[in-house]
Image: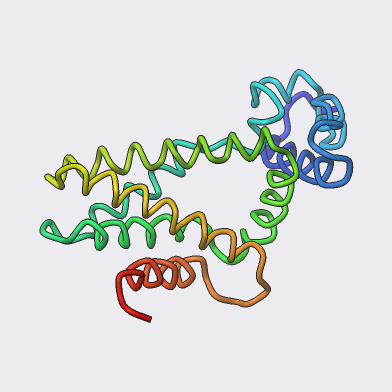
Length: 189
């Protein structure tokens, strides 16, 4: 094996996802992932603290994708309009070519209760950061927390649809549709 090769992180992620999908998360070892990627176990642990991190790497970037939308919203925008801008920004983090990877990753997560819990924890962290940012925009409580939590719920439902359906809508379009569905809940049927 080469001492250093470019793309190690991506190769480890792809190998891990394929192994998790084929034999299950719990039955896959870090050594197997490294071997499948043509790397050493030591290299695996240089990049990841444990095998869960292969699936959850990039949390700061994920949060940043949501928060980047704050700048796109008008300073006097209503809380849900700010959240809409955040959803648009976050959806941009998931272009169409990333959909097969996202779909397989979500299948692996959904099959393992501990990973489902970790995913929920990750999303809860985004909601906390989003609520904080909304308060910094002078959106008072409880509106800031309600808007942030609602935005994460919209994202979660949209992401589930985007990863399980075979239509060609972008995640941004699905997020916008789900936000419209949320806004329509207070209207008579």
